Image 1 (cartoon, rainbow, N blue to C red):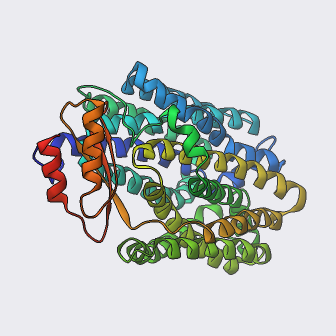
Image 2 (cartoon, one colour):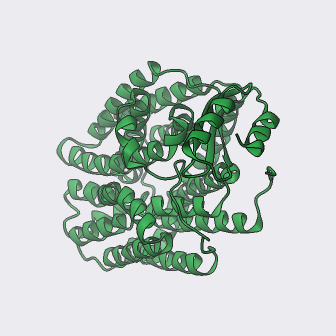
Length: 459
């Protein structure tokens, strides 16, 4: 077996195309975040802040409920069919929200948007179209695209608001989803065969183990808390910027643009230190502490314009670092052959956080005022910090996967045992059914040449 260092043109096309689908969908979802609370106060039902929060977070609940079933359905009915179905639901929800004349129809539209939960199916299709040794790079393309779309939406949302309003943004979201369907049809190749991938899909048999893993549970609570705090914040931050600084909503991009650029500039060296210097836990804990500091400061500064701006800066520094480090921690701490299951539970926790954050933020703002929203965020962040401080230091390892020739279960066990003895290999798991070797190897160095010889030589 030759170990190819470069992705093929088909792999690059598939990775870029599927990253584009994620990006188009996420851009549409995030565009309204910095302006929706302002818009909603002017439509029937929007005087109830609790309903504003529900409208913001509703898609998280339906997404959490359906993304794992959609991924499993793609194994049975085909990846593209499930993706088309999910995008159709997303388009339908977008246009319902665009035509809504009150907050209740917006909530219905957002719920249908979330029901188009295609992320697991898209990830499974990506696994079908990429070789094991390049899948991490392909997943990284999707992750960076989602991050870019979030940053772009924070700037574009307020700028677009003055031209097309929130209904226009919902309609644009529907158009972007239609464009994503074209990308699926024209750009994304049809996989020669679809089969289960442990690194990219949820294995029901492994769910119990993942749900009982205390280290992974800490991380799942973390992503839940991060997105709950984020969604709760944006039930009040747009309104607070207007109230404290008299800054028109179409000018908010002037705040978000420098904040996002500076936050990204701080994130890059932090990630380099975390990964290259094996300081992942230290950087991670620091970011959680910064998140807690931000929430505490906002309980006092929510009525002060420049205080809000400074808090947004620290929030997005922490947010960007945590969004980048949490998946890396999942990869390092999850069993090699349960990575897909661990990521599936993680993604579901994230979606639930969006729902709980929106609903809680809206209710608290309605009953007690803006400051209560940040007390909620501070409470979640404090619990998370306590859990982060006590978590196990993650091993300095990275995941590698290799395609195998046909072998039976006994041969797979023997090969796994031999691979585990190779210098620098921390964990080896071989699946005869998937014909894949999953390895966790030391970042400081490992003998890849010997690994390749064992795989090429078989057993």
